[in-house]
Length: 408
View 1 (cartoon, one colour):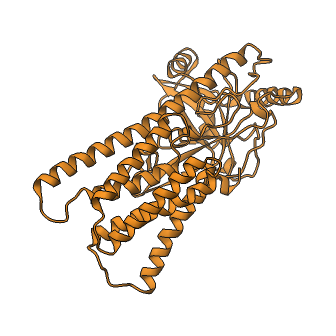
View 2: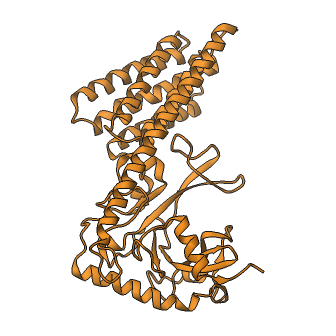
View 3: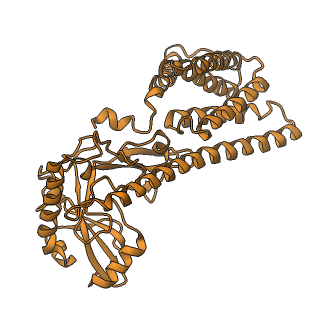
């Protein structure tokens, strides 16, 4: 996975031309304004709505580039794009556009929700961004230019209902797809346990939205926040099986010296903002900069359960130094790496989660961190390379095996 692959994670590949069309339109409008600064011919709200409609037009007109295999969709995209463009031009030039635009936007959103809800495709970031553009334009369309209390009241109610219904439907379909793929992965992991050899499951046992074949469904892009590295072959070879066993054994033996968390602290591992919980990560800055990849003697992070007055070493978390750089996978599908999408903001608490529309909140940006791989050193029920375990299981294990510990 290179830097470009990291950037477009969350985008359906068929929608990338439409994404760039929307970006190019926005840049063109800005450059025209910067160079010419034409005298406005319509009130500011109408001009904003016009450009939102026109940007949506650019996206719809470019969608057939990726969806050219469906003649019906091509016709619908081109027709809606042409009408969006015409209505956007009318809004920018001070002509009537509101009623027709509101009808078109509601119809377009209804069609989009039918597609994502019917399993045709998932709610990817391009579709979500386009829906947001259209919702903002709809809000302007439903706000009367002149004072009209009755129209304002009903317009506000209609707008709120549209936002709630469309946003809830997008979120629900994304979550449903994520849970479905999670269930597939859980079933695959359970099946794999029957063929486990030497404590290593014979197939991927991840539960972050990847499917049994290691590939992520388009519907889980906006919801999961976790990027699973696709695997070419879900069945490990004998050599990969042996390599995975060797890596797990070496990691378990090397990290035995950190069974007591105080030893890890003495070796330079430090906690982040979270100092207690069932999955506390301690990072070693020196190991993160030493250039040694997947070294059981120098893992970049250690994971502990620190709760109930006890601390238990759970395992190592190996991390690549740069986002978009793929980590080595000696065990093939058994040693599958993953990355996290997080939202960074200058406002407290610094980290945020994706919104109901699958995007980062206002005043924050989405960042993908370097790939990571878990290697559990305890007797994990899903094998040493599983990504997670139930809270109840970790808590019980910590109570039974943890060393008494409290931060000084």
